[in-house]
Image (cartoon, rainbow, N blue to C red):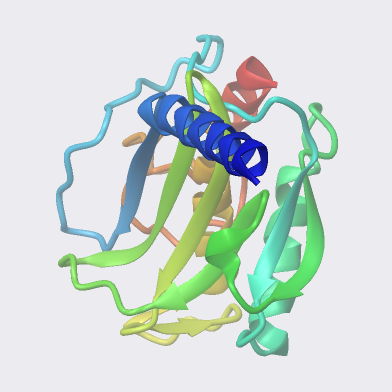
Length: 206
């Protein structure tokens, strides 16, 4: 009995040590996509399409993308279209749609959900969890306080595909910029096209 207790204690101590070192080397980063007119502290990137990008990225691609099970057919369709857009570059397939899940925060990949976001002007955000320079998971959240559309031009609403494309770019490791032609522009433009800057940045990472 004493041997079993000693063995159990040893196992628990080992697990605690592993968790400590893992948590000590794990960090998070949050990106906010803002409504036009709002300012945020983001990295200003120039529009030089030949520059290199060095930052956090996934160890391998494609990365699985899971949608919140509360999403309706429109949200899922727009998410799949955003995934297809990122897969259409010279890098090839970087994302795969993996279906719906009840808890997008617990996925081993990219979880996409919606929830109230109180930060002023925020349309959506992405939180990366990474160790060193390797991304372990990402959570994309759309601000459920706002109204989204599937391509209409209704004032005061936001195009789902555009927002999903921007946030998935962050989930892949891309930073914000101030180039209005880029899907990674730090404020909402409604664009659904990848610029040469976006494509080059993705190519630099993967």
